[in-house]
Image 1: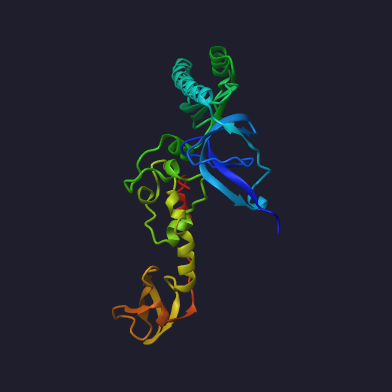
Image 2: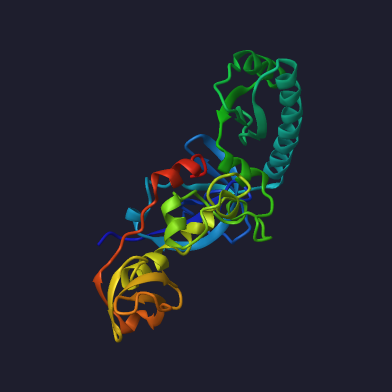
Length: 290
């Protein structure tokens, strides 16, 4: 068993991925501003996870160390960068409109040392932004990088309220986006209506992932719609099920015209289970929201 190492978690954006760094034996508290060494240079971040021990196998690569706690000069540099980002956003937007580029600027990010500015944008097509880069480089005298992002990333950056009335999960606490599929919605018994299962970004709601493990377990122990089961009143076919309560409606073979009988999943035996399938027509109708 490998020896555990001590780390702290640092975030560079209000809602972003947490990166781990070696505190080098120093004490840091949650909320402290720190200067750290990253793969793209020196960065300014906030401690969001206090000192803890992790197995090296839990980390994707060797961790870098915390250089120091941020001082007043570092704080001023950070605030100065924020002002530059606002200015760059305004200028870039003006130039996009002047040159008639089919792109929408979302956010501008300036590296802590000012050596690079990143411009995040969305577009339905490829964009020739070479002239725009030249103009921006001339204005800000630094390296310019344009990054095309997806609609989920836009929601994460801009924030907003979901149909539940709460702030977007992605803008509040999700570090990364996890795959969400139409199959999950169907297994959870949700209406396959795009307006019911997609978020403001137009993609499937991230929260479908939260309870999927529970639904997968319930599907293993509950007869699916269409399953042939043996009940205390004889053999029949499941026409409706409630995964949460475990209650089933079954049409009995010996009384096919009668109203369905109701049983709990524990009182029936599965003779032949059914499968949940996403039909080709359903996939076609929901194309583009996964």
